[in-house]
Length: 251
Image (cartoon, rainbow, N blue to C red):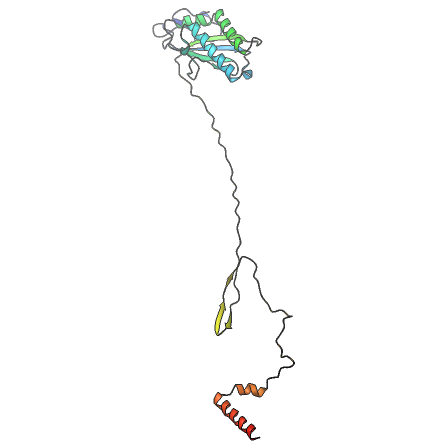
């Protein structure tokens, strides 16, 4: 049942005579020229369809709605504003808007979209795409005068976190301070200073088995007198040498 011209109902379900009320604005029940169309697809195999099949169904249903309303395909949009398309939810509910309708009232649109012929057209179009073996049927259809406002698409942002591990190798360097020694070579002193090494410190110690210098058996021992004479001043040593030479000549 459809409300008479100039009246509309905002109730869902079975229509009764008391549900129809006069439309505002002189009886124009489609003041913005837009209407929301809702169609129930029963047993619609949403999860079994690929993206191409779903797009084909959406475009085909938009064409059927445009044909029934007497308008072009671009005038039918989904809830996001995509032209020549409809929105289909997981449970098979179709939502669309027909825009800029001229020459037809809301009552006339409802009469066309509620007809048995339109229901049959929707079923045949959908089955031709998803397969005739599907147990698809058309449920309730509703028409509601409503100005179109596109919904904003929702997006989900995913943040990934990566961890970078940096390995650091430290080289230990040891500074060894050697004992400072002074040696005399050719009348010059040589200073042995600090030594910087990355390896272990080398130390040199006298070997217990090292040979010591000893007089050979054939060598003459040096007398104490000779050693003492070597310590006398040279003028006195010269006199003693002359005296010794004179004594030897006299003998």
